[in-house]
Length: 226
Image (tube, rainbow, N blue to C red; front, side):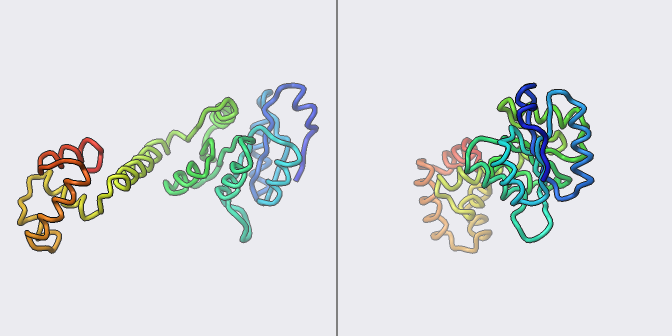
């Protein structure tokens, strides 16, 4: 772990950055890019989760750039971010990684990170991302935006379903009804008798606070359930 003079960084009103990656070559490369911008200053480097916490305590950086994967069996970058966020608003946190997997992006934002940046971005985009989150905004690399919206859309639908009390089987029935399926077709798809299906439908209507098949479909569509 290394540092620059903290007082000098404060004196020039630079954005003070902690750079955390377990590859020294990667840290040197990112640091050299950032230091071309007069308003950015890397005040600490870290190669392990423990060093990240120590660096935050020692230097109180404005922004932490944290990779997802670290060597060894310790916490990954998302776990570190979650723990740091539980301690307070500082530092603002950007995950900077080569992983463009939607689950990583989703889990990172659920952990409270302020940005998710791919290592393939340009120097100027990385600098702008740091400035953005330092100013209170959030940032995600452009190629990931569609994935993020899809993931959060899925979460929103799941929450609506949980609040409605509808089961996955209930949603199957509603989707089939919306497509004009008959009671016989729906009961066959759900492997139940028609009398059993009618009881299920009455339960669905009650959960949606409606009284008819048409009203149930309209309400399910309105809520984004189907």
